[in-house]
Length: 118
Length: 118
DNA sequence: CGGTTTTATAACCGACTGGTTTTCTATCGC
DNA sequence: GCGATAGAAAACCAGTCGGTTATAAAACCG
Image 1 (tube, rainbow over the protein chains, first blue to last red):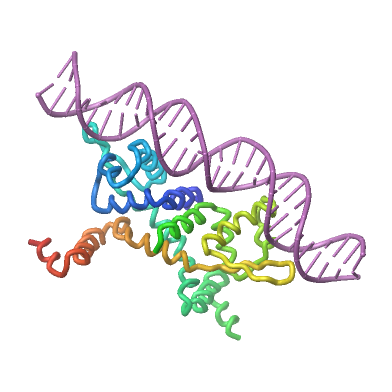
Image 2: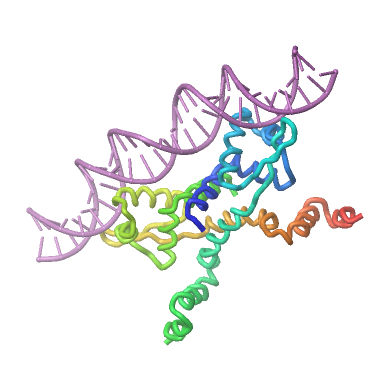
């Protein structure tokens, strides 16, 4: 998982307009003007956001006459949650010590846990 | 969940140096110089990254004489995964139709599924 | 006290962001 | 072909970002 992939994914998600666009696309494909409608923003503004999303691999675009319908591509989001999953134990208090122990096991082999306990 | 919280969280995660700092902090507290050591970057550069992480609520800082040890605060990451969870069905192909159906249920009450099937 | 260590702060820089207005291209319907 | 519609592209702007150097502040050590 190249770092710049996560860079682009998280950067794309760091804007509320872009997150709202992704949320809208869960309901299905949409054209640029359909996506622009809910926002107090000009069409080129939306097109810029769409280009950011496209270069992050979060949307793809088809062709329907003049229209360029956008479709959600959620695959990069999996990489994001996979990265975040490494921190789950740190916000779920009760799992913290268990997870730390499992981490030791992964790093140091099957005897690490016993050494830890002794 | 205020939108600017997610803004700050995702923006903070969109930088590989900051993600590496968070990864380091999973192993426990660390001082600024300890955090700076692995990077080809000056100390003020690291301090800037730490300020971004702190304002995003992803780290907190204690006091130990001259040192200001940093501690991981993972709570905002939970909000991030909660947001991303809404998209899980779109990258897990096989769950897509089921999850869409469950979404309908949540929105439209317990009869929506039957109406959908008919 | 004086010097060292640790960290923060300020000023500066080039590059990028998020938005605008304007203009251009492509495709439609007639 | 002609006008309307959908979208992209370019130029511009203020502001933020990621980094630097230089300096200051705070607490330690001897």
